[in-house]
Image 1 (spheres, rainbow, N blue to C red):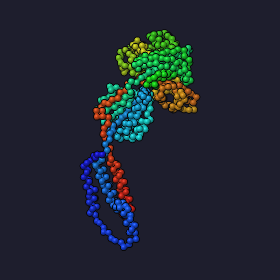
Image 2 (cartoon, rainbow, N blue to C red):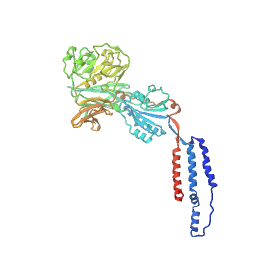
Image 3 (cartoon, helix red, strand yellow):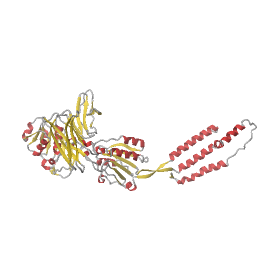
Image 4 (cartoon, helix red, strand yellow):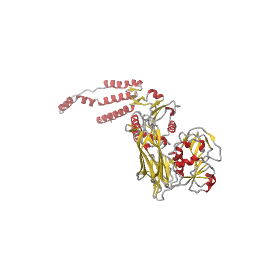
Length: 589
């Protein structure tokens, strides 16, 4: 124990003064009483407990002396030293993405971090804590909380949300909460590079708690299927991120019956992918592909795809590059090539693929516009970035080169960019526009090209019973008209488990866990799927490190826990006891 104000040691004069006063107080003379009736009884009690008799006669003195000594010590501000997390303000950022479910020795990275957070909560030293979870929209679960019980209760309720962590956005959001004081920010994630941290602020110390190293991951990188008169055609791409060849079992089952349609043994080369294609499969409303293999990350070993029950005929403009028709055909999608002048005569249920900008206005059919015939393209050079949109659920736009893009449409939504310039747009009625000719990109050389065309076609196909494929926790405005008797929609898993309720007019929020779901309102029933984002199908070796001023001194610092409040409580208790002693002696009057 230490003292913060040694200067108040002079207050020792007070109890010494009281002690001197006690020695020189007026003393009364004892007088003999003639009656000896109870003399023997009194003497016996005195001899049996002489110290208790002395204490009873001098109780007020001892109580007053003890109260004065405690008051003197309180003025000197006593404290106890203990270890606590460094920094005046503590911020914890918890990654809730799907990759946190990677398993090490039977324990997920997420559970490991939760245990570490529980241990650190005991070392906060009543410092204010802010707890944030990652996602497209970062969420603050705790704000300047000092109650350890509340903190630990919140930690125990944390769950994986499966959506991409969006760490750059979360880090920018976290810095907006800073108060200008020394702050320690803990990032509980699976992988983060030092170069990704914003190090401009000297008042921040970053503590990155990464996952494990040497994790094995084999995944279903892509899975798509389409229905035709001959049956179902499916395409799967398996990825092996390990350094050794992996052997396992690949299965396709119908949903919800669970009937097995395909099962075969697969061998995936190290650091490579394996493509599988199946044709003339039995008809089903949805398919689930699963990969039975030994690895450390199981959530990406399963993928579900919905099949459109009603399909629209696809027509490709003869002026477009032949690779467009070839991409559709590789997905077993029947297409017809028609001259440009015949596009206006097609039925309203057709899907038109062209570069004729006028079709966006004149055609009543959905249009997939690839390039523009009314503008000149401008050169670009940069990476492609995409927004959260279900059209990219199966198509990874990474590593695609684009040399030129056309000017964008002003009133259309942009869902993909190249060098900050619009690359893919969507019109208000659902048309998709690729602002580049096929010849201006190397996209047809990537597996994502036919998958993107398939996904775009599925979105534009007419099917009132399917509302689409979404990423985990994706928010989207949907035109859902509920049953008049219900006025709301209820979401259920394919196994019948209730998930949530969506009121009429409210925004649709997809469930977090990937899979197939039913949405019901009275007699109306629709289906949708939640697919794991492509970024969550890759895991990296985790690293833990610290950067900042506090990291040079250690993650902990010595704090002083004041004991003044405890001393004051003891003084108040002594005053109450003193009052009770005086009351019993009859001196209060």
